[in-house]
Image (cartoon, rainbow, N blue to C red; front, side, top):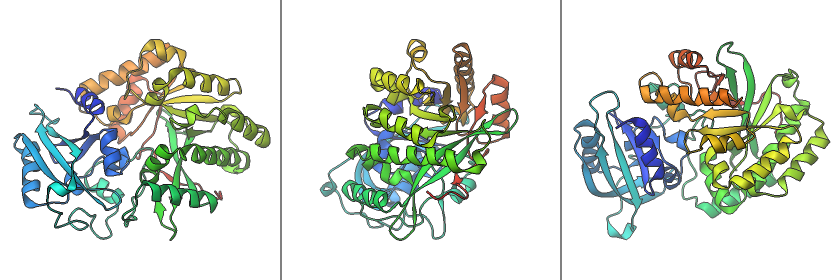
Length: 414
């Protein structure tokens, strides 16, 4: 069974799904796993899966049997440690997938369970916590993964805000908007042939009440559910336009800014007027703004997405279809979407060196994009060998830790 089809299965599942390699490191996670654990998808990748369990010895031994000995482990129960520090009672199965090669590993499927059904974890808050002075970036490097954060992750909090529920996160975000405690980071989009920066993608972070940096995987899920994400998107858009108008480093007219648009914001009928007002107030060149919309968000409500995109395209803005390949967009739909760039999902890029299926899929995506007059951006580029393969198959641009980590924007006051 190929890695690609395992991912298709995981993404279609109603369970939380974590795929791990033969060393027990997370290689893929679906959206349900991300939501239940409170981590962004990219923050999950590359970490030892045992980090997320409040471990009893029996659980550790059972899980390891799945990916080291190829023995299915069914009907288990235990506790996961959420990003907030709260324990989550779950029932789970760990099943090896049939492979003797480098793709050996296991799928772990879990569902929340009534916590009263089993004992409280003895090691809650200790065994699964990161080691002292052990940040996420250094853990990734030790695992030999040069680019697992890609667009949305930078440096993990060394101490989270324990006990924070969705309502508390929404309240904290409202306070951060009021007190101007959100900040923008940037990550380079690079021409794979010349290695020149052609664009910067803007990424949001939040400064906590004590000045700590809080990653979007912590607060965005609650903002999505509450609808506050529309207000956050407007904040980013306003700051991005200001940045393009004022920041001297962007005097090069060939450099664009990429702005992520959430699924909810696509349905915000007043947003087009808001963007038009920002355009008139700043006088920027709209061709230097690229709005990124995920493939799944675009096809979930295609007519609304088309109306939104066409309205802004008429003003001169451009679009990128993000995480392309993670959904099931057909060529017919792709031809209707007024997108200029396809951002190839990083799950395909990470495996280019070792997985012939991923390589063929990427080659097909690039060829389809070229036939439709669109350009491609490869996400999660991890190393030089992958970059050479991308040049060979005709990809246009790349993004990932190997080409540039997310960084604060110099000399710009958010």
